[in-house]
Length: 145
Image: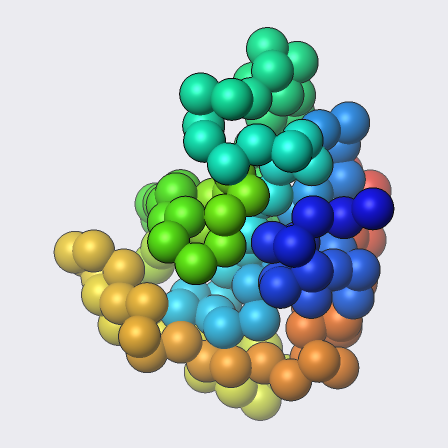
């Protein structure tokens, strides 16, 4: 059973990939194109509560994330933000960062905060169908590489 944080971010519709201990999901509100959420599947509400296996498996998830986003977004930097203010389960917001904007399905995704901190309040909100299409596109890239 997925945890409440995964469900809040649209699981299973938003699922890009899954490792033993982590879910990689499309973030429905996209401050930058390709923004994801990395959600731990373990029942942990503090980073220090993760098992050694979850810490080791996080490397597998991050390697996949960076490989796929580099290919699909051509990011210049990448930010991992642990913002557990509302959603209590251990998770990271993964934001590819770039100068200018990226285009996808007729939408423009500017990085409004570049080159400083990400501007989370200026996100492009994707509807459920757009989330599912982007998740599928990124999932195919995950498997292909």
